[in-house]
Image (tube, rainbow, N blue to C red; front, side):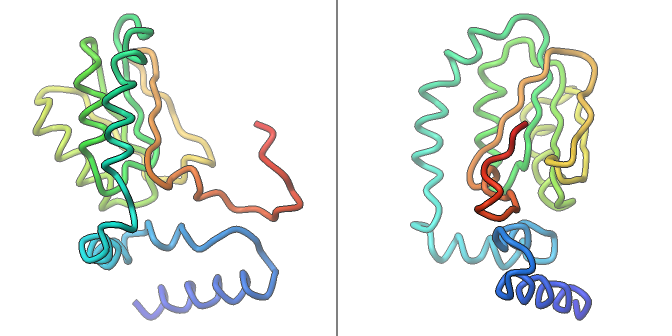
Length: 167
């Protein structure tokens, strides 16, 4: 943990001093801080409103699934702490061929795959422990359908003057 604390302090100092831009969100989602983050969400449920995201997902998932033909491989980019979102999407995909979790946190990948395996025994499961912004492999076996929930989208670093990514 001392090495983790040193890296966190150094990154925070670089952010405050203007040597880098962005946020500190990537620290929130790393393995070392997961227990603290989960405890924070439990004590402060109003901080993150997954109920609203679930309502939107439940309303829109059938329409999205109607556009998907044939076998599908679902890619969860940054699965996070609430696997129920991924499971909701899976329920609307009758030809679900495989599921891939892509995250920097080994713990989040593990928890996600355990939940998906329990709900869909026999489904091919894959994992990629990496920052999906640096690229990831698309598994064979079905058309890829990627999902990203919560604050994952905002884990992007960069200076305001750089503008939005062009990709």
